[in-house]
Length: 265
Image 1 (tube, rainbow, N blue to C red):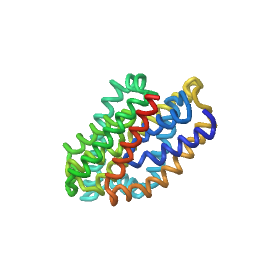
Image 2: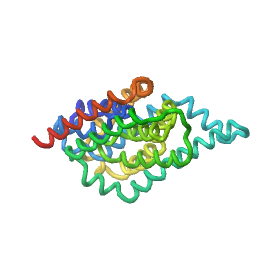
Image 3: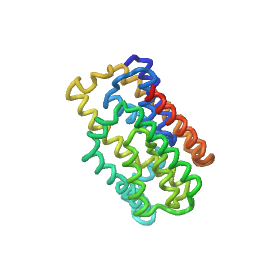
Image 4: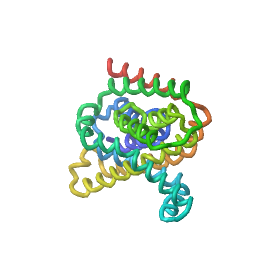
């Protein structure tokens, strides 16, 4: 992978991580359009880790308040511990999928553009359904959080948007739109940071794990993903809340059609 290709894919990752359009699906489409045969798991985790760090920067006040509030007594501490508990609960379905199925999913779907196209169509349908059927205004309870966590677990499939799946599921469950977007962006931090930590251990253990992409290309991709993600997280969260989901549904449908055409040609 050339340096400019790594930067371009990093920008794609950063911009699409916070829109309900599937960053993993766009990475696969980008690789297909650029003719990049193999980016490797290291590249995927590095750019995802970089966008997670951009989320930490954007939500630093929320995260700081949460950490300070955890040991605090009274209502403030209770709210912080409750929110942290909801984050942990949302991770359970994803942990189940990672432990039992992730290796098989990566082996079978990496580079499968046709599958990405179908998944993007599914994302489009989910977004349109949520726009039509969502009943915003409720709060996050344990059952809602677990169901949203299941949506995040399904989003390991390239083309199924994590933010699209979790926000749409939240709206269909009646969760307030602002809270749905905020929770969607924060709930992914622990699993992404954990996966990044594990990948760093693999990188340290031997150079074979990064053979597909050079170290300078990985660094350039990480920086591109961080800065584009920082910008997108600040701008796009408000866009998701104000403008609804129909535009993103149409985009995902067109992107899915493009992927299917690429697969057929």
